[in-house]
Length: 164
Image 1 (cartoon, one colour):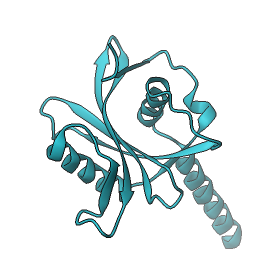
Image 2 (cartoon, one colour):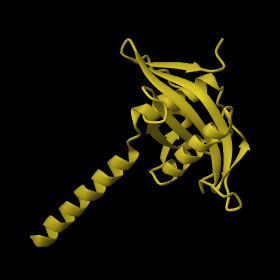
Image 3 (cartoon, helix red, strand yellow):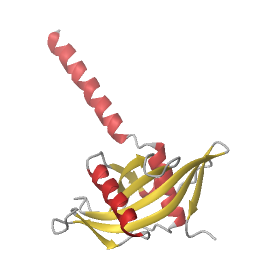
């Protein structure tokens, strides 16, 4: 009887862990969708993309910024970082993409991060992006199938600094 209870408990625990691992936050899906729409985000032959994110509500008083990293390599050694301002408009989530840069994790640089294509905005922006990347590096990574990025969501509004 004890063995059966132990096996059942183990199965419940494993199924809960697997389900929790598969759940991608809607905020992340919305942001990744907007990158696909606004930046003509066309991944090469990849069927899935790897992301990490961090929401900052302190750097810009009265604003929420989602820092999103799209890892280019499975090893998390390089990728793209985006600063996306979050607002609400008529029950819809607005994702306003305001900055981006490509980076490489490097032991040669004092911060451990080298920008291949630096962001606009100078040192202050670079420091905030570096700080965000470091925080994201310590958090969980999420994998999203490319086909899921291309599905329109009626509650998501995408904007970008490149809009006219």
